[in-house]
Structure formats: structure tokens, C-alpha cells
Image (tube, rainbow, N blue to C red; front, side):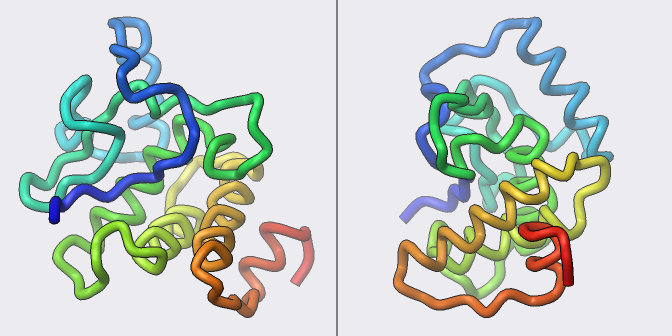
Length: 156
């Protein structure tokens, strides 16, 4: 088993090679969420994902959304995906949850939505909806807490 954790989804292909303009844009989004730029590696790895053993976040072409989809995971902005990896997976490095398990991915999206600075309302909503969808895909019922209700529905 590998130690990669990722937002996944049907986003732009991970085989799309990021050019200098893409990387410049992504780095501005990294700075916007207050993340350490030194943790991010471009055009390496199999997909955009956090790699525990090296404590790096690989950034590939799948960092970009699929705007033709209706799935929250596909619609998450570059900033939201960066937050998922940086504020969701990285702080939980080496924890007991199996990597890429539904609850590992649920936690990453939920914590990113709660903890990442400078996310838009849409970013936070897509991250919470992604967390909920991760559980749903495994047949696990989630009881919404007040944060989730406020982000998804606009009330507590």
C-alpha cells in the first residue's frame, strides 16, 4: 500500500503537465491559505496528493476542477484542494486511519473546511459536501453538526 492521500474525483487529468503560469497561479493560492510553499512539489507523483513518508504534497494537473460536473469533489477550486491536502491530511500524518479510507478523506475535507483561512463560501461548502459524500459512498450515515448545517444550508 502506498502512502498517498488525495482529493481524487473526476477533475482535470493528472497527466496534464502544469506550466509556469499554472504553477504561479497555484503558488498564489498556496500563499492565500497561509500554507508553507516548501511542502508542495509540482509535476511529480501520480496525482495531487499528500505523501506521508516525505511530508510533501504533490500537485498535478488534477488540481484543476471539472466545471462540467455536479459532484462537489470535482467542483472544488484549486484553493479548496490545496486546503484538503494541507489542512486536512498533513496535520494528521501518521494517524491510525487507513490512508485513502472514506473516514481519512472525510476528515481531510471536513477539517480543511473548518480550519483553512481565506476559503470562499463555495470552497467550504464543497469541502463539507465532499466529506458527506465520502461517508455516503460507504453507506455511512452522518449526523450534521451545527458547523455542517451552517456551511451547507446557511443556518445552525
